[in-house]
Length: 49
Image: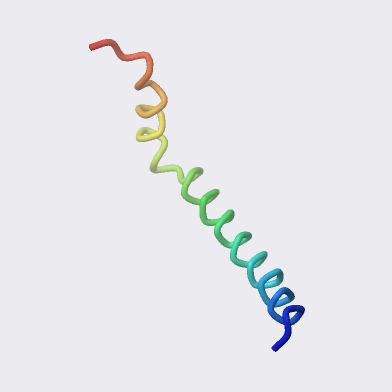
């Protein structure tokens, strides 16, 4: 196995891994039932103790 073989494998499967990771994060961020949780988190800096 040469460096070029390893580089090709890392580039193709690494890209696929990052695309799957990105899509998973989008699904996590835009799921409808988490809106209240994210809205509460967005208001944390404005809360006064």
